[in-house]
Image (cartoon, rainbow, N blue to C red):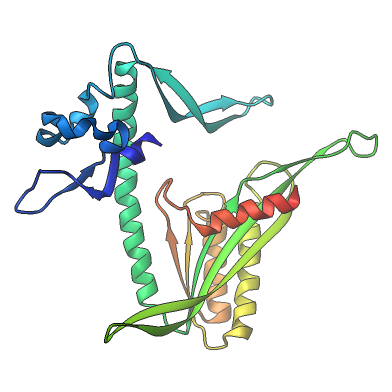
Length: 283
């Protein structure tokens, strides 16, 4: 994505300091190479990337990617990444529009990451840390036979469970550097579904969650707290059925459950990637 090339927290702004510190802002050299070295505007303004004569000129057309609505054959609309093209004015408008969304999402991501690190730092042997999400639903096309002409859908639920923290140190010279390590379990559940609707998702989530609690009560009899991270899907996690179940299961197993909801478009991680592995197996 072009935005990732233009904005990078790891790159210092050359020859531009505030109170002796170089702010980490635009990474324009990724786009225009050495042309920035001889440009006075590069050192004068952090917003000059949108007016760069090397990047933008009246004759050149540029391609970029944005989410757009795609209409399926069945009449349903889904959002997919589409490629657009245009001149300098069109690209600048698309960049400014996307950049405002990026800034909001990036702030939420940094805040979520800070909260996640706080959860890790406070974990003890009696705590489970769970991240879970649903993978995309693959459609199972049946063979065209008289006794089987319908279509089925799979629901893929992916879970990552961290537990049993332990501390170990490494010697750097004469200094001990301590690190915390966790046991990590990947759980992938493939279940049939009645269709693309999400009505069955909350039920599958609760069933799997309860089975995991029973399993870890055997493996870790002393565990008494669960921190679970999910996205904010209303029919999967943010619905009255799930909250009712959480209340019931908390009393039944005498455990504390902390449910954290990720920010929009910012809940990605290994719990999503293992869903891709499951889809390959199904196909």
